[in-house]
Image (cartoon, rainbow, N blue to C red; front, side, top):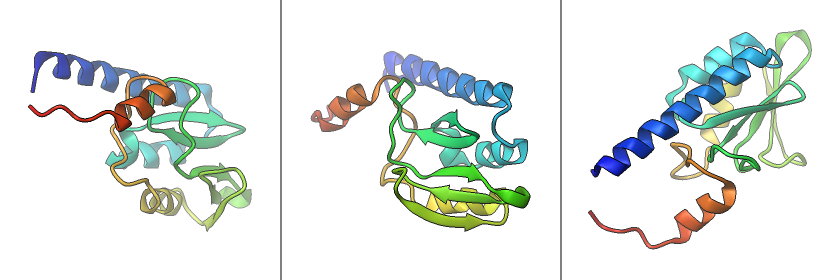
Length: 134
């Protein structure tokens, strides 16, 4: 591992953690859901964002975030609904935050995470470029 890799990883981790803190601070997502999602290592390494009280996860840290991971919506009576990754796709109901998290984790794309420091376009270019060997 090179020093540049370590610095880039530290920068990415700081940006992702700041994203988690911003989602906590904005108060649009139920605290129990946020804590359950953050406690799951495979989700904690992704960039979180909210929309209409929904909790979304992105494989990159900058807008326009990726839309290839299911998201969680609040439902009546403290339950949840898991949808996506596209708005037209439905996964199903979840009685608890932990159940909703498990439904998302089971549907993570192959090789998902940690989040890429950059935009979706930069992530796509990185994924399509031949990987250099160390």
